[in-house]
Image (cartoon, rainbow, N blue to C red; front, side, top):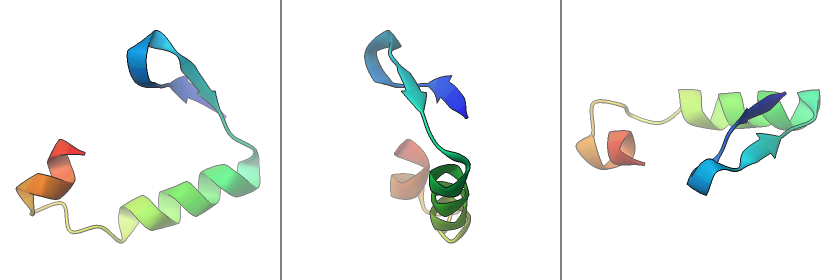
Length: 38
């Protein structure tokens, strides 16, 4: 998976790394403004 990163860079992830990131993000409490600002 290739996605837009910081400062105009691209981030590339293997399928395994992308799924791990998805799981981590899905567990965050998005009602919390500090989390959304990330």
